[in-house]
Image (cartoon, rainbow, N blue to C red; front, top):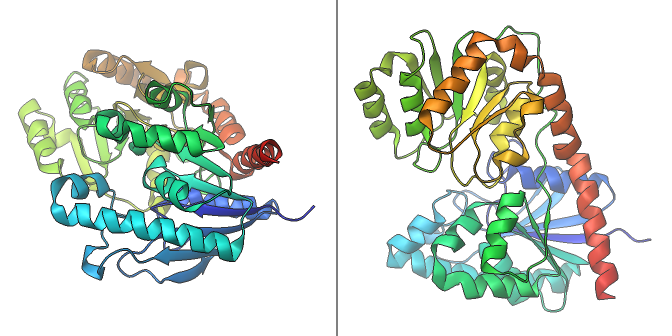
Amino acid sequence: MSALRLLFVTHAYPRHSEDGAGSFLHRLAVALRAGGCELRVLAPSGEGLEPASEIDHIPVRRFRYAPRGMETLAYSGTMAEQVLGSLRGKGALAGLLAAGAVAVSRTIDDFKPDIVHAHWWFPAGVLATGGAGSTPIVTTMHGSDVRLARRTKFVHGLFRRVMQRSDAVTAVSSWLAGEARAMAPDARITVAPMPADVALFTPDNAERVRGRFLFVGRLNAQKGLGDLLEALAWTPPHVTLDVVGAGDGREALRAQAERLGVANRVHWIGALTRKELPTIYRRAQALVIPSRDEGLGLVAVEAQLCRTPVIAYRSGGLPDVVHGDWGGILIPPGDTRALAGAMQAVDSNPEAIGGRGAAARAKMLDRFAPSAVAAGYRELYRAVLNDVR
């Protein structure tokens, strides 16, 4: 049997294998290639990016869609803000949708893939719908794309069109699948996670710092650091918090910490590279994730791969990956008193929860190892091809 030929279409793909943007897609691509698939990636252009490159033997092509100064929609995580906030952003989006559909069509003519795999229903699913012709499409929803659609009713028709055109649809969590079905009740959606970096996020024998908790994420309202600062104020004075991340809310959050009287217990570390994260996971007593409507919560997976317990809100996709049997604790969203209580429970008896770290790591490996995720997708691709023949 000939190798399965796959075309990934996405709005964010890393510049190199160590880049954080879209790195889980690259891990999936590498694992699929290792399993015998032939694969190419199509993504928008951006500042400093070559139109054609190869990353770990994965060919990547990036299409132009606007004058250089306007090609800022991809890779920054601010596409929605740019499009909703300015005519310039809307013009760039129009160019991306038109040029992207043409790029998909041309790549299909050249490469002749068996499957087009669109990552994020918008914009990649829209590009695939417009440019794939009769080639089967698999569309994967990752979180931000569905949250945007739920908030923006006028795009629901476009969302349903992408769902109807897709030969298979996946979502990275059961919650995300449910959110998508609320907009497209007839959509058949399979829950299939993206792979984690299981080679990087590993435990070691370093001793954890008693009373030291960790937050990793963007400093915005959705990630919920404000709730965590409130909870910190209810904990004993020796409990501290490392904050890893950047964002527009940083100064307001620092001011909140001052008002709450916990400023001297919060260490504002800023953004870290992926290679720097394992060390900080390993020294924390627990990672705290007070976010709402998280698509999955990859940081929860990374922490548990390091055998670090996770305290999280019972929201979004987090219940898929945080479980009491594995040392995790789930809290009702917004209950900062309960959040503080969970932190104190971990602090007062770390062995009781931390001792289950090996089980948590084993669960994460079963679900999120690149080879396991790639095997599931190869099975899905074959099922799609069997259905369309």
